[in-house]
Amino acid sequence: NKTRFAARKMDIIPSPDISWIWGLVCDEGPKADEFIRCYHDPDWKTYVLRLPRDQPLGTPEDEVDERVEYLAAQMRDGFEFVQRSIGIDVEAEQISRVVEFRQGYFQTMGKLRRLMASDPQPYSGIEAYLLSYPLQVPINTGVEPWEEALELAIAEIEERVERGVGILPAGSPKLMFKIMPYCQPWIGRIFEENGVLLSAGGPTEKGLSPLRYQGDPYRASAEIWLRGAVINNTGFQAEQLSEQLVTYGFDGMLFGLFDFDRWLGSDDRLLARMIEKNTDLPTFYLEGDFWEDRDYSREGLRTRIETVCEILKQRKA
Image: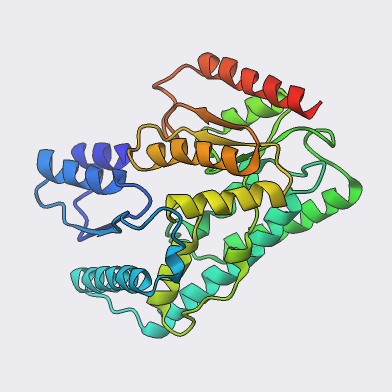
């Protein structure tokens, strides 16, 4: 968002025909667009997709038909608005193919995540997490290189698992991170230097179950989003994350780096308490900015990470 604003303010980029911003996980993107339009460029045209967080705590929202219908309609309306704005019509068959690709890629990512649960852990958690990127952002280079990279990574990891090769010795403490800090990879390195592994969780029973809306790409997409352990209802997120912690043998959970965000930051603090109660495993929270490390001291964060690592190693012993 800082890059978008600076690039427009410095006339590095022109105003787009349309900026389609999703505020499902957080509202930083929509607020950044509002800022650009109000303070610099009144011609900055935006379509915002939002989802109110108004469901009772613990609701599995992908099972609530009205919720799926609402989000599907938001997606459909936004996509049609974007097509009219840029004068391009996308065939329904192509939209369905994208949903099918996403589900196939998600299933393959599940295989990688299960391999990451091996002891010793064969791969850096941040490296593995980066391979999930086509599930989260538009890729204008085509998806074939990503599919090839994922298959190559899985083959390499399988070979490492077979040989018992890991980035730390077997039995090392392992923390699950809700959103891996791939923008600040040095954070993961500090944990590894102190004998603790970071990794994302693997697929849940819910995530592997068949979709209810197979025939409609918008309803299927809405169902996929509402299942996710990032966007879903906070209480249900806690259940999903707790399931992953226990299923894949983690020693605790790490949240943080999103305290600047009024949705994700507050969610993480609430989830930490709920998960600790559910699993009796320790949870930790790191203040900081996921995208930007110029606002805080690396050495200050290193001291806190070393403290977390000592606690985990003592519990493991």
